[in-house]
Image 1 (cartoon, rainbow, N blue to C red):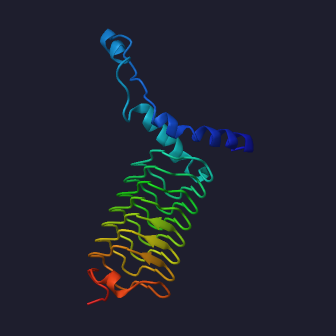
Image 2: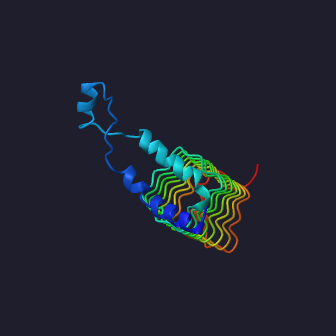
Image 3: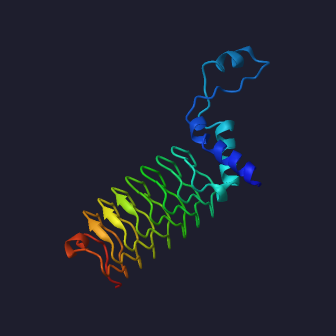
Length: 223
């Protein structure tokens, strides 16, 4: 892709979210008067246009860095090795998507949804995760270093050996998650929920964690 073609694509892809949130009339069967009439009053929910737009983004997933993609709907997509570094993904939707080894470094992910996503080795380092939803996500060996997470939720998620070193975690919900072997070195905790969380082998060295923060965890030590 030439430089000019790349610029055209980057400018165009910023409009995907706007189109997804627009009302798109159903395509009528021109041989059916009833179908033509209904096309004036009925709209696609996740029809052909919606699917086509997601496929375009999937096919160019390595070139999505530093773009405004706020509000984009990429749920149930196949996005391994996608590059979203420094992009604006505010209120985006990656529910049940495959985001293995995706790069979300230094990204705005406020109120984004990753519930049920599969993302082994994904990188969220230095990103903003205010009220971001990672519930029931599969994110082993993922990277969350230096994130600023305010009221983010990781309930029921698998975060084995995930790296939260130097993260700021305020009001974060890790309840019933698996954080076996996770790293929280020099992390800053403020009212974090570890109820029924597996924390065997987790490393909290240099952090401000207190015993009372961990009292409701399911397990801290191997048995």
